[in-house]
Length: 112
Length: 116
Image (cartoon, rainbow over all chains, first blue to last red; front, side, top):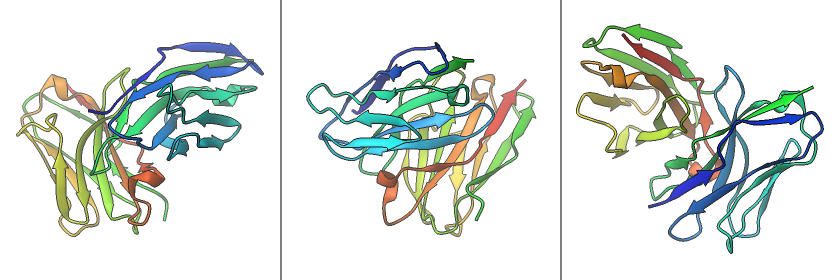
């Protein structure tokens, strides 16, 4: 079945540092891929998505490119802010009924 | 519309008691999902409704769990004879008919269940 593996945290960075959170997937076919973010005390929010190979999803300065050859969807941001502190989840569209398969999450802490 | 609403936000119950949670999705969303999230883990799929029909259930959904969506609008998730292992955040999400899950879900803030 489909699965997602993402790098374990926590990740601690200084403000304006470059961020990469790795995510790899296994799937039958070429599923849509997602990054969700969970800010402290809030529900999960869709951050970005890509629906086919070589697509780049982007939002709020974050980017991720759907790489079929490496089955990866790594999340990047060139300059993180304190307000980016949150837990980030990579997800894979799991099947015919549309349930998402989530990774375990990576907690990011950005220090001023 | 203010998004997906879940009630209550927190529930503390004694082991063996029954609990029920409610989810009100975004009004034009016909798909509704329940997930469970334990500490340090990502959300795990429990069940899915399209309108009032429950179309898929995870093996995580034991016979103590039941979900309904009687009129295709709000949904309830009931846990009977709660166990300490049921302690988790229960998340509800909805998605629209046009894009379906490809467009991404909208999640509620969740109901945190603590079984003591």
